[in-house]
Image 1 (tube, rainbow, N blue to C red):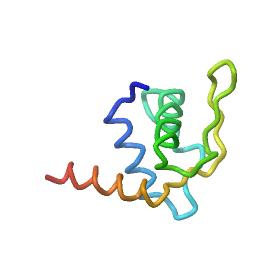
Image 2: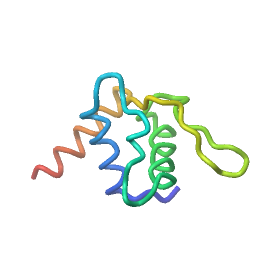
Image 3: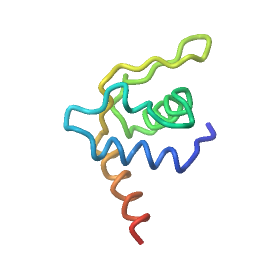
Amino acid sequence: MNVDRNLEKEVLTRLLHAHPQGLGKEVLDNYRGEKEVASVLAFLQDRGLIRDGNVATDDAGEYSLNLPIKLTSSGVDEARKLEGESAH
């Protein structure tokens, strides 16, 4: 899967700074479009960075989300690492 690294970083950062209950539909707000963000969320789920079962794909390749979206502990670590890289 070819994922836009900047979008991945943006999504992880937003989830890191989200309410402890996670993000709802607002996680999809991005000028690239909801499908792009959903594909990044699917990629993050495959890597174990968001809770399993949050993103599903149907036979037509359309994404459905089980909200709210929350980071796993690995996701928190990755988001902090990416955030630290941008601070330098």
